[in-house]
Length: 308
Image (cartoon, rainbow, N blue to C red; front, side):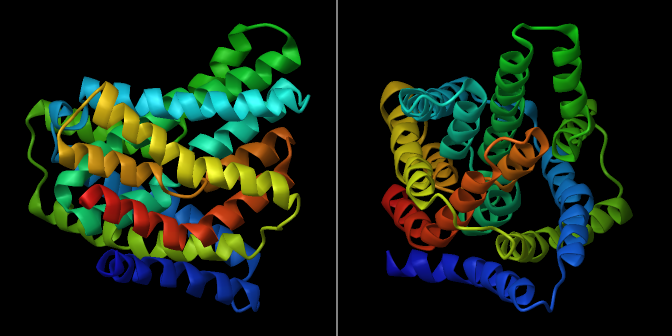
């Protein structure tokens, strides 16, 4: 485990640098927000486009891998939802808690870190996971929240879901990259070098931005946040592991990548959605803070386990 921990440590050290820079006001909230926008709309999008443009759909989409990840994620989503409803929470709050329990920071942390740690062969499965999280579970959250408020499905709800997907630069970058790949076109060398240069900024920029965003997170409602962090860091990789190793077995490498990605801490976009809809932003904030801090140990442990 120690060699894996030492390999992951520089990534979390970059998160710590971002946190300290924002915590001690060297980096303002406005600067953190601007950096996040740069990474989200430019650097990470360039990285995903270049990866996707050099992969075929067959290299990304694997039905058994998708089924195993969906099974494990949906199981944890269901557990978190059931516990929330048992505590007599409303549907929209239960949906936000379930999102914390099952959706990891694949975009900002998983893509740059796992691609480096596990090699370029890991990119296809990572893009598949990211696509499932955005297309299936983010859509499910919008449907549950909007449906519980309106009391019914409506064309406006479907329009909201569709526009949200169309405006997401990660989805756009992946689809555009696959379109280039499917067309048989070759990216010109100057364009490829430009995308590489811009995409290389995604790893340090994303990790620094994660840390800077944590400085503004509060640690309220610790008991609930601890439960949601346990779901995300322990239960999620455990049940995804059952999915890809037992129920829908795939190659050991594919399984290792998917389980490693499932061990990532709570995604930052869950807080954005919680703020947007005004649903329990404090507990989401605390869940992101706690799960990210604890993941320094748990992610290394899971990667070491699946590597064996």
